[in-house]
Length: 203
View 1 (tube, rainbow, N blue to C red):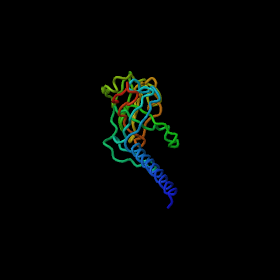
View 2: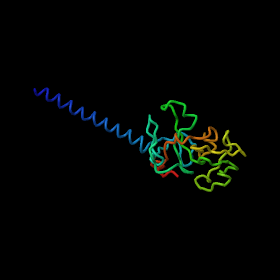
View 3: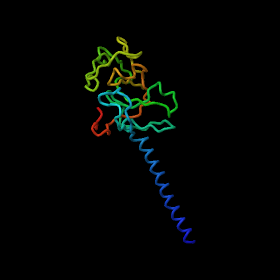
View 4: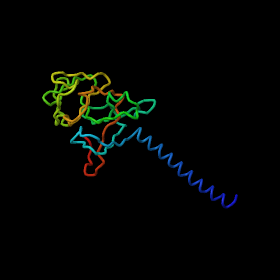
């Protein structure tokens, strides 16, 4: 083999190594994003003051179990969603759209399957008992929408959840569109990582 051909072969080898490295990195990044963590940018003020527009947050898929795309199988997680968790999910009115057009919302979990939920005088009542959890009780909730009317408690169906935004006056949530299916729960919000002055664990 001539010197010129050897140099060409060496260059091809270097390029091939770079391409292979890029492919492996892309596969690893996809697996991590699908099964472990995801990065989100907050677009609205529906969860103020804990989350403000522009905040970038990490969401873990491991807590509730990561969902494998295409086959739509959920792997075992560490537990079920709990009241007070800040959760990323697909609301029911977005589910009919193609996957690449579906919006994902982030709200606080209020009502669990089988529970009676009522918004009364700005507070949340679960099964006729006032919720005193500080993460929920600190907010004032407005009666609004088909599922949030005054004197009209609702019962959360099996395998579904009732979500509300902390900034109740500026939130499109379960009061309007009802219950989010367990199947479309994405993950639990962990912490704000950007901007640096906003760094904090999400509670």
